[in-house]
Length: 330
Image 1 (cartoon, rainbow, N blue to C red):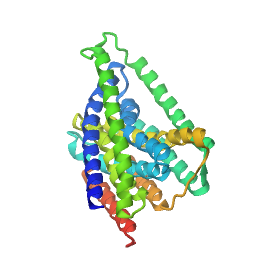
Image 2: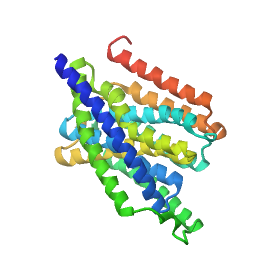
Image 3: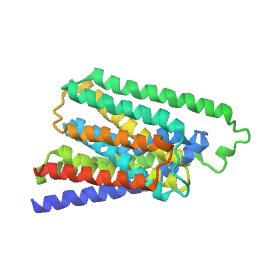
Image 4: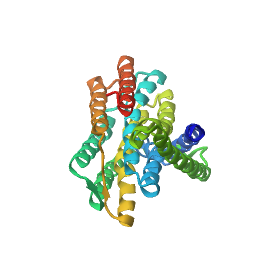
């Protein structure tokens, strides 16, 4: 028992480390691909960066529902990762940015708005629907397609306004090499995401706590490492819109595709799922954190260091509450 517990903890730590390493190379490659195709900074953050850094969460959700038959692990990981991205990443990035953490209005009006819609959709589905099938998966994926359409419209407009007549964006970038790195690191992340899912479920069994609690805390933090790396790298370069849109874009992808795609695949193979989600406070806490973060950004378009500390403390308090909940103290 003790030996198996230690093995699971070790595998989780090793998986997190390799997800971190792969995520770092993934971020570099993603940035170069975005520059090559002249994708606007905020759009790159909300699409390439967000999708690539959200790959661990998507894979954990896929493995959890298809291989381990525990869809709540996918929900817990995605909700926990969304909370981590929302509170911890901006909190860290404020202290790394060489300039004031001023966020463009487009990021707030587009990315933050769609994220808020995603959260409300998730809460409504959890409260009012106990069986999830094709219709719910298509609703989630449909909302994401609308978001992608908005992103594509912005990119097209940006290219018209900023023509690359001399091909400066492509200079010095070997696009074939970058795509090879991109897909190789994706494969590495996929392998360790599987190990992470398996041993997170085993750890919850050893500790006698619900799998969703481990997913919300341990698994979510591990899968959020690529998001943290990408946003931190952008913040250090002063690309504030890039860093912030990655946070919102990643969370949008997590909720709409990270849940919608595994649900669609499972439903097509085995039929509708019965959802038993007894920890509604997790999603409601995420909604509260979302409203607070958006308020901070909308107040004067700048996230101050004082506000960043509040976000970090709020995350610590919420995780403490979840741990106390898991051991029956609250």
